[in-house]
Amino acid sequence: MPRPSELALPHIAALHAYTPGLQPTDAGWVKLNTNECPYPPSPRVAEALRREIGEDGTALRLYPNPRSSALREVVANLHGLKAENVCIGNGSDDVLNLLVRVFASPNAGYTFPSYSLYPVLVAIHHGGIEAIDFDRSMKLPIDKIAASPAPIFFLTSPNAPTGVAFSPEEIEEVLKRYRGILVVDEAYALFARKDAVPLLSRYPNLVITRTLSKAYALAGIRIGYVLAAAETIDLLDRVRDSYNTSRLSQIAAIAALQDGEYYSTIVEKIKTTRDFYIEEWRRKFGWFVYQSEANFIFVEPKTAKGEAGPAVARAAFEFFNQHKVLVRYFPSHALTASFLRISVGTDDEMLVVDETFQAWRKNA
Image 1 (cartoon, helix red, strand yellow):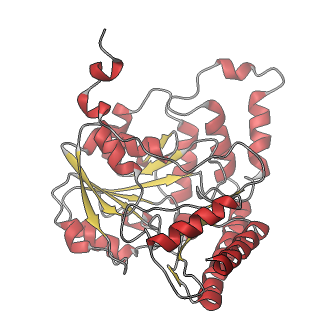
Image 2: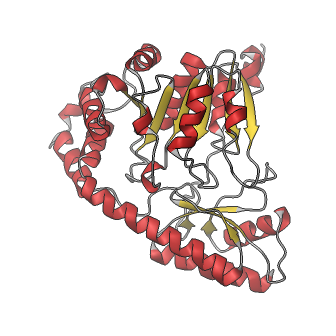
């Protein structure tokens, strides 16, 4: 009998899957490697879930609303749009996959470094990927993106892993000249000063993706959404799985999105913590730190002797792991190999990070 890998589609058998950040199962870790919110979701979320489940959970025997219709209305109202401009997914990864299904043939484009799931999704559908590299300045390569022959292009703003955001004016300049679908992945938009939503009314080739995993503290619920022209949403609905979000996910997301006051407080607290440590590590250590507009910090550590580089960053990363502090290291690109990405945690967690950096410098 042939092996399963011999029967699989050749491009799938050769595929390198996306590698998520480590999710430890034992206690005692300070976990700042996957940009999760350090604070709990709105109390309204748990209340809404309890009401939906009820005493005996009988509601769970029924399928969810296949279109997430009530949630589409809430999202549309939040952004001043219509429900026909919204599609809901099982996390933003799901809606990104829908976009690839519809538009990524025979290839797609993206800026690099950015979210490493993009090329994986394109490869699953046997497409090619065109990477346009950033340099250390992180200046948006408008001309190169505009000239891309790809029918769809992914731009993360604020960028991951650097946290650098691109202005609506820069994005509009791309939209004026690029002939394909421009997907602006705004997973971290609530932590940024501006977003691209106002451009939707003028550019039918603009698609914006959002997630409730970051600012809304619902990574475990798995809800994301697309904002786009009604024609684009119709195409996505044609390839969307029939019941791609659960009853409880829809209920939780509605409750969260309707408690804007609670989340505004959390977002401001995260931004304050983020900005404090960006300036603290610049001042105290003399390190280069990107001016993040996300919920993480991208920092280039240096030894007490002033040494920096991939070997130094890897040593710091390993030192953190030895002390049960999880951060993220991206060694595969020249721009990222000298840096660590640190999700913004609670005050206590960030104090541990700061003390660990100091201990590492003494031992480096």
